[in-house]
Image (cartoon, rainbow, N blue to C red; front, side, top):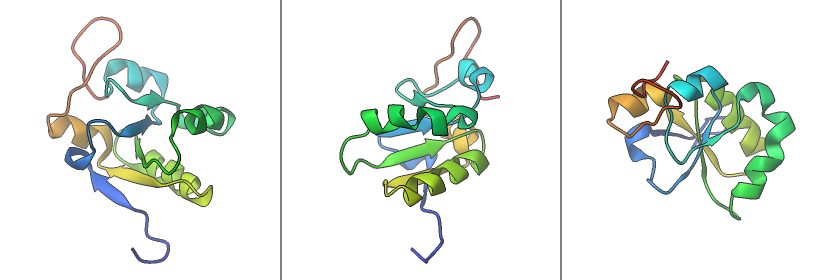
Length: 114
């Protein structure tokens, strides 16, 4: 990895048991998300950072996802600066859905990425 280059991984490459951090807003999350993901919207992230550190094991890689990859890239950069092992999920939840990875929704209707 070159200096300043953000580590990224494709949605299909995220391990099933990985710590997946979803930084999308509540309406996006409710429409469709990975079942085991930790949801901390980017707008709340700094104030809720402790929730992530409580859940992440020592040295555990954190896979950060949003809709297409912009917000998650910013959060992944922040996590790296905090000394955590973080990678951006390239293409976000749109790529997750396209790769056929499972989604669940809150409420009625089919799960989908919005």
